[in-house]
Every structure is written in structure tokens, then in C-alpha cells.
Image 1 (tube, one colour):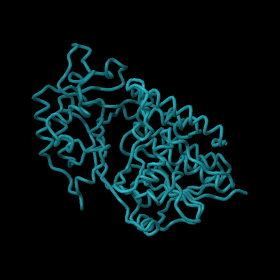
Image 2: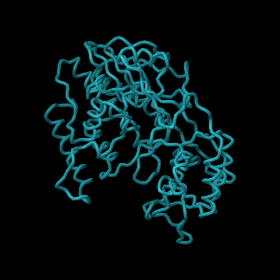
Image 3: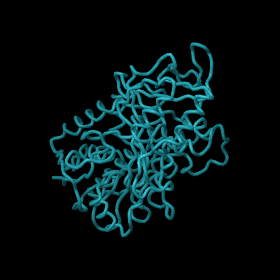
Image 4: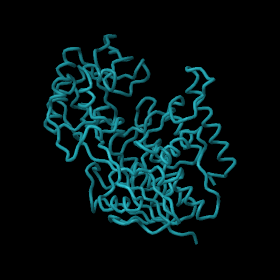
Length: 434
């Protein structure tokens, strides 16, 4: 009989890892501390809960996110397939109904008789073989044990969550559906004129925020920067960021706007929408007051207010290899945002790589990581070897070897085609998906 593998953490990385192991005949004992011990960001005790957003980003080939998805599809990723079954309209992005997605993941796991879910907190490093995938909201006790294991203090940064509004409360006289440059109608656009935008920005930068202990601006992660921090960078900073009006015109009038707030569907029913790019640390009262200055949201009903929370991740360089294995004799791996990858699909990727690597190690087979010309391989190598100044990292083409002889216009397509070609060659050569 194959051994039972301990997976600590029921997030995206942990669930992908568990499904990969289960499909290879291993037993899995998963520990999830919710609801016995809650976090500052999760709203439920469901497995694979999407916390910050319901979007898994673009599926377009000429993006790093789309290329990563293509690689993971080739590698036999389980969660991406489930996500597509639960998708909601979101243009070229893969966005899901959070509740349906969590339920689908739980059903998939429960279908395996050798899967056990234990609802309790793990405070010490588990016995091998194991994968620690507790995410950025790792409990203090386990974080302390990880610090002792790696010999360094954990690094950390602050992350933020955007609010959600009830669709029926949006004033449609000041809103319209449409994608940029006429590409679909999946987003609800809330235009603002120049004076409306200026008044909104002035209120935003002076609004009351929640005081966080030991908070420093240097600990903010750029990928989830609070909207009020973006506003403080300059009068037009939001207009070149989440409120950029480029490519958007009201189909009723053909008129553009000075700034545009976009809402994205939160669920299949379409009765609630999240404010794209509006992660925030404003107090709840200030969120209602300041965001209510947006013309279409003057009478909005907030189903969830935004919050900020502290994330923990390992200084992985030298502590984990590119397969996400801890140094040492024990068959111990890490996965997810705890390792320093940033993003939903990136976390799924790390769970897949960690699980397949662990399985192959236990089977006595060679362990390998995809080539550096793939987004998967490049990001895994970044985590293992970034060194001094390590920061969480999203999938991006800047991690790949440069294509100096390819023109700028063709470069992104070249990166995508090369990555897909090389991942398929890697799978054929190593039997990685077996």
C-alpha cells in the first residue's frame, strides 16, 4: 500500500496537491483549522475558498497568466478544470462563482475513499511525508515552528480585499455594461467626470483607515495595493491604474469618461458584484461614505466591506528547492503563497509541482521541474533562488529568458509558444503527468 501523505491547509495549493496525490493512489489526510480557528480574511470554512477576488486572471495566450494556465492544463491540473465548470462571465479572464467552486472541489476530494479531512490546527511541523500549504494566513504557532525549521524569521506583507455590492442597488442611470474596446459586456462600468473624480480622490486620501499593529508602507504588496494608497501616489495614479478610462465608452451616448470604476460578477446569479482593484483598509463606515461618492454607488448596499490582513511567507531561497521541497532528509514540501508565489493560479501550480514531486520521490522516480523557458519552471526557480530582497512574485514574462532576436510585438506570442512547446517536451521526456 502507498503511504498516507499529510497535507496541511485546505486552500487552493493544498487541494490541488491532495487531488494530484489521490489520483496517483496515495492516501491523503488533510488538516484545515477553520472553523476551529478562524483567520482575518476567510468568510467561510469551505475548502479552496477564494478570499481576495473571484478572478483567476486572463486566459489570453499572450499573457503570462494565460500561458501558465496552458502549461498547467498540459500537466493535468485538477482545479483549473473545476474552475471552468463554475465560471462567471468576465471577458478574457477566468472568474468563478466562489461558492460553486468550493463545493465542486469538496465533492471531488470526497469522492476518494482514501481522503480524510481533519478540522484542527496544526502547530508543529508534521511527520513526513507531508506538504505544508497553510497559505499567507498561517497560524502564529505553525509560523513559529516554520521559523525554527528554516532558521530564519518569516517575512510578511499586508494584503487587502475589495468590497462587494448588491447589483440591484447600483444606479444604472450612471452605469453601463461593456468590455474595453467593445470586447463583450461582462463588466459593469461606473463612469466619473473630472470634478467627481477629484472630489472622490480627495475624500479617499483623507479617509479614516483601520490601524494595523506594526504597519509600515514598505510591507504593502504591490499586486494588492489598497486603493487609498494608489490615490496618494498622485492625482492621476488611479486613472492610470484600476480607474483607467481607456477603451470604454457609454454605448448609449458614445461618450467616454474621465475615470471609470469597473465591477465584476461575483456569482453565477449575477446579484452581487465586486469592485475591481478596490482593495482597501478604510474603516467600514468610511468605505460606505467615500465609495458612495461614485455616482452609481450613491445608494449601494455593501454585502461585504474590504479588509486588510497580514500575510506570512517563507524566505524560500536556500530553504526550498525548485520542486518546493525543504532541505534535509525528511520528505517535506511546501506549497502555495506560503512559499512566496503570489496569486491563485500560481498557488495551484505550486501545489501541483510539490505533490507530483513528492509522489515521484516516494516511488523512487526522478524528480524534475519544468524548464526555465516555461512560466511554471521560471517561477519555481525564482522561489528557490531569488536570494536577498526576496518578495512574493506573480507569473510574469520578465522571469523568462529574454528573446532578444524577436521583435517586441511578437515577443509575447513567442514566449507563449515556446513555453507550451517546452512543457510538452518536458512531459514527454519525463513522463511527468503519469
